[in-house]
Image 1 (cartoon, rainbow, N blue to C red):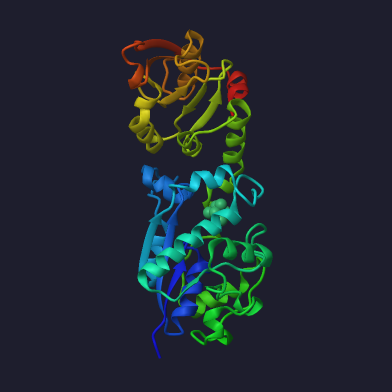
Image 2 (cartoon, rainbow, N blue to C red):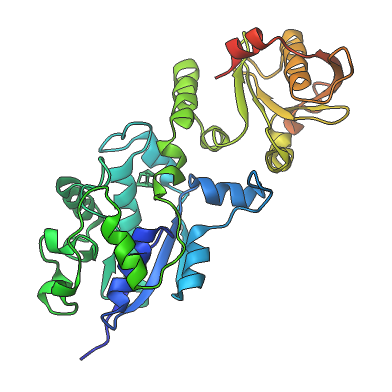
Length: 352
Ligand code: SF4
């Protein structure tokens, strides 16, 4: 009998690891596939070189656990094109700005393309029926597969016995009887299976891994739309970084929280008005939305914000350099403004 090959959607979480183990235990070759959307919290922080509170580095969970549990992994960047999905999801948003149904369909489309490229027979996923409200109930699963053109080709080993039989089950490529019937949010059965397969370390449930499900991210997104009516791709990605403020003039300011964010902002600073303290502290980028330049008031307010997050003198003062973006260098000059630590009440009024 022909040895079957499958593509496994892989997050690095326990469910997708178990799905792979269940299929591998039937003698099927599995190639794990991980997608980078641009909004995975851990991977975004890892790429920026940010560190955890304990000083350790962030690791991509898919890379880490594919290596640990011994299966090949392919990572595909699908961030190009993902912006449109966030802007105009056909099936709407979950509780924040997570377009989970459209997002899953987009991933399955890419998985199908990859499956065809490598000559695999079908796709598996660690999704569990009724585990998450938006995309993991039967109706949503059917919509997702139809949209992606993969109907009958996706096996969900953890819930397979509760779902209609798929082509690989009907054709006998896999034994449905050896698959699971898990439903809902309890992790009891997964923990039993983890023991059976010797999985002794895994990520906690992946719900917190996506910026789009994050309340703070959604609030910042909605604020930009409310004030400016639209958002560019660059602005959307900038919502993943720093502290955000809206000055009285409506100028948007982002101030860094740590060295990793500082390095990132320094890398893109030439596109924006940029502010840095003469001394130690946070750096900022600013974007006026009326006209191209910052007003004198804006500059003073940005310097005061920087002073709030920098090592100031005893009177709470620090000098701040304000630099125009490179395309305006010939038109505006750099300024040095004396910043004075901002009162908390004003700061909170401006905070997004
Ligand atoms: S949580 Fe994020 S990555 Fe996961 S399906 Fe929803 S939008 Fe996509």
